[in-house]
Length: 253
Ligand code: PEP
Image 1 (tube, protein in one colour):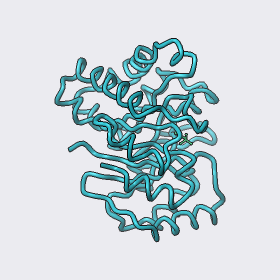
Image 2 (cartoon, protein in one colour):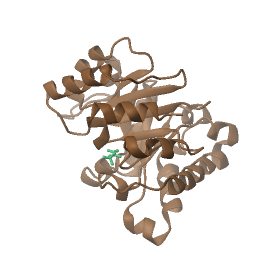
Image 3 (tube, helix red, strand yellow):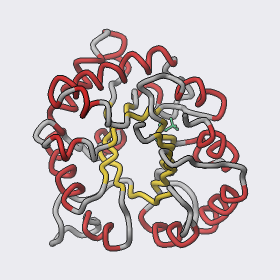
């Protein structure tokens, strides 16, 4: 069975003590992870050390970075490279979140370089894609997302692509409270899988986890995750509430 993943994206939220409280509250909730399930916490980089020690020894639980620089080292003041994250035990890095594409002008070509940087340190890119509202309204979301995937990922070998986790996040559903319906999510997740099947073959495509992101919460997670091509979620707002995120973990199939 493909990996089923509940990934928290804290974005630029929480003080150190709030982060500590949230993780400790979460540890006290009733949640469990089967062998094929993972919980991943993409915390602000400054809290990676703290989160890693708080979650140490927890099976199938990982601390992730929210971004990295494409180069491994050099004169890039303020940036953090993939090998630096690897050196503190990070195994997953979120790439291409729509906020980074929009506010930091991250292009598909730049993201292809970042994907290479993450794979080079044997970590997992959690690669975000997804369309803005006007594209959804025009009904051209499939070709929009397909272009994002082709431009940033299609240079990878089959061996590399199965190490990538995809997060489909329609921009109109991020932080808006508007969730894609489970039918809308299933439809585009199946399309994304078919894009990989055409390029790499069905058995490779079947191994790629495709997460849904966009106002996932305890109340809708089970219905979304029950769809055959939805392999969990990338969760912003609801990941900042321990009981909500615990329920989202428990909604994994
Ligand atoms: C996200 O940050 O990736 C996200 C999906 O946010 P939210 O769950 O708040 O919509």
